[in-house]
Length: 450
Image (cartoon, rainbow, N blue to C red; front, side, top):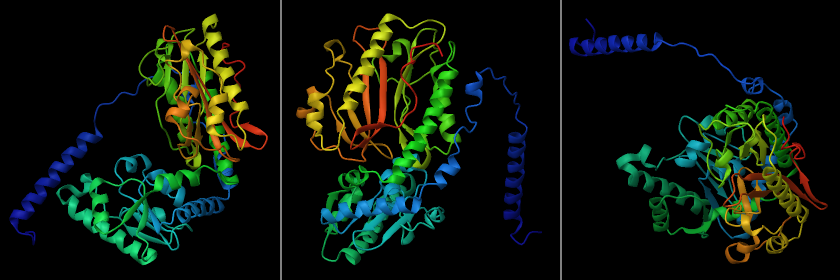
């Protein structure tokens, strides 16, 4: 007889038998592998075409991380804050170099970092994830975080939030002294209220971090070139396998597979559409099958190796029928818009001046035109966002383009009474001599049959 007594032994044995039965069901479920009928470019999308490991090893990541943390602290000093409390996954990545379940923690901010302006960086991780923050020269101390979101805290959310706030306040007092100004990015209403009860004064950390992130170091530029080389490979495979009968989802999956196989991380959006679904823009890819001669347009929004964004757009005609005169006109105008606006980019050019001198969008495209002319690029879409000329001075903000900014130059053209639209976009580095392209994918033959 078990020392636990007959009652506990019986329950235990019953559970064990049931668990064994469930395990047997899982092992022996009926399954029939399906035949695969895909173009070779699609079926082999996971094959390596870029030596990612060697390229990453060639980048001095310690120097890259130190550069970023120094940029953050420069911004904190300029705002006279005692420190920053970062919960946004991209801000944490930039300031510390660490990542952990990026998409999951964008929804549930369970990890966070305290960065003293003059003092240590304290990383708060999930109890079972502390090892992910070890070995980073940017982090001085690792603590187990307090999860205050409802999924983990449940009915104890207020209790957990108060405990969390006391720990943050203690750090602020220790390393900020009488300075009660704290830069914060994403707080829950309850968390903000508890810190205010402690006498904390908030400053927007997003502004500080976006300004820090906008000027790229040599290592960051190299990381973006690596991400773009992977993106180019994905586009080559996508276009090479493009054929009538495939769904938009199948086509889009090639870029996803290529990115993940090359140590990429994720893709922000699902912006690939075909035929009549190319107008208006911002419809997501779906189960529609493409037909010969239709336009397929997409925006990569690809977060690649090292978390670097590769953000370009291309439009192609599905093989089997030549491009129409209307498609060629749309494409030529979109290419003209991108080229014209790229030529304006120089260090010292103001955002307002850029918008004023930008390519004039013909009236028939005005309703569906893209919402920005240019936006910053880093770990994701970043500051600045420059609006079309008709919107910039009313709804936008001014600033100045600077050397070593990375930006994407946008175009979308689709008439309200048209049948299709065209999306083009180039990612560039701003240099003293102008805009330098990252992508090597040509536009010259985009409408020819691949």
